[in-house]
Length: 294
Image 1 (cartoon, one colour):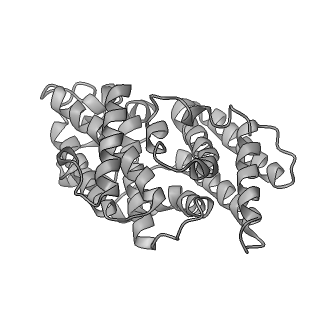
Image 2 (cartoon, helix red, strand yellow):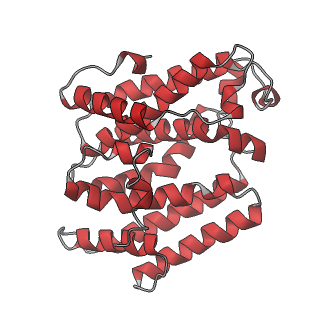
Image 3 (tube, one colour):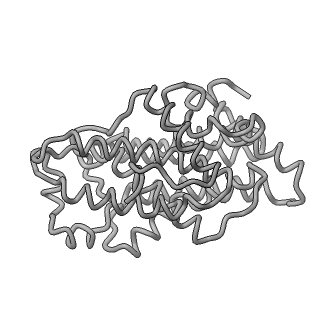
């Protein structure tokens, strides 16, 4: 497997690195290619501001997955991912696993492309549908690759919502500049804030972001009790991002639109210490860290 395939997950300092730190060597070997692929492709709409470029790149990745199914792919990340899927297929009794996995990846890329063209969510129901379509297939595939029990659909839905909600905060400073607002509009209405106010770099939006933080922490605490290797990865990753989000709000002035101006961050040492504490409390059945309670 190419070192480039796993580069993002083998770099100390990355939240993805620390979220996988406590997996077994075999679990990490199976999961890392998928996480690396997700990390690479989901950032295309965010970092490519021209719609034609996004369309071209996502379409190329779709074709590359189709080629990989026939062992004709050229990109090392896709080759590594399909090798991982094929290797796992040899150990299970699912004749169509490789084809189904390739279809899942292609469908997820197709949804990313569709979302880039129409990202509006009018209400929580639309938002939940958006979050589920974006990551449901990835989570089910990850469970398979970890050779672990399937998660209940309600748990998958909550994990999808949490990861997408955190991703919105992480990339809001870029998305808003490109006119991409995936937040449910009725949430803005309930918090008495307009899209123009939310995307104004000088607007005081602390109340809304504190509401969004509480909303995420409630979902986080629901997932906490699930003893599953993939859930551990999710609670560590989400925990790191939520702590960064919370500290960013605490440090910013009352008039600052902190999420618009920058991405919430933690130092590598903070991430390592927090990931160890989250892992320790989660694996021993204790409650979440106080900073991660709503």
